[in-house]
Image 1 (spheres, helix red, strand yellow):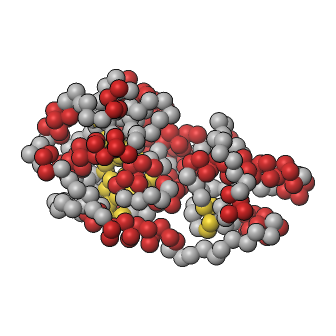
Image 2 (cartoon, helix red, strand yellow):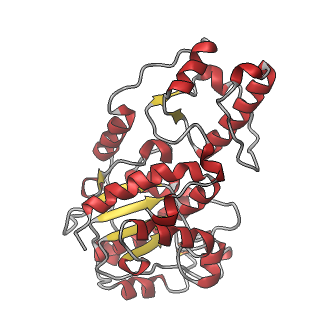
Length: 314
Ligand code: SF4
């Protein structure tokens, strides 16, 4: 696992991420206020009896607010959490084996399919597609970018990583996943025996949307045909979406990233066009999120191991 999964100061959290049971029931949600935490809070489940109810509620509210802002709505039902819930007389519904994630993913596959742009089928190479994009002004993201970050990696890559959008450093350096997230991504890949040069990396939209801004639905829709054509041309065994928007868009789902991640979907079933090979899609967590929340590395490591098993032996 190398440096990527080594312990750190923040990994002391007693709530590692693995989704098995809902906790954010309506009573808990009423504690939430719309404000977003600037600094990730820490919930200490130890020594609860020694703290006042007010302090405890404040701490829980802060923690839930932060996770709610990330789209987390479920927590593992570990012993400490069970004890806490029993004390608070807020029983949680029993976990559903297989979870609702399975039903949701099945539903998305059945209710709609991605339409590939027939105008791009004549673009045979990645360079053709990049040329077609040109100095693109098709959506308003051209106003916030300084460069178009098309993608990087070998055309025969077996793994394709799709992030939500280029970050500031990516825009400046004209390459995907640079800076500290890029260094972490390299470690994550090394942990499963891959180098960045083995992987094709691109994003849902090709232009930087601005600081702390996410691309709007119409911007995603406008840029999506280019990603689909990249997927068709590279035809990887595995597409790993690292981000909520990329995962929700490619899976045609409105569920949070934390509900979607960690499970393969059959990408071919989600597409109207016939892909030459079977491609599976694994939603997972972006390196930028892991840098801020090191306790989530465990979940990311789980996803990477599943991906490794789907790839041909080196
Ligand atoms: S995000 Fe895509 S569609 Fe929008 S301007 Fe950039 S390349 Fe063009």
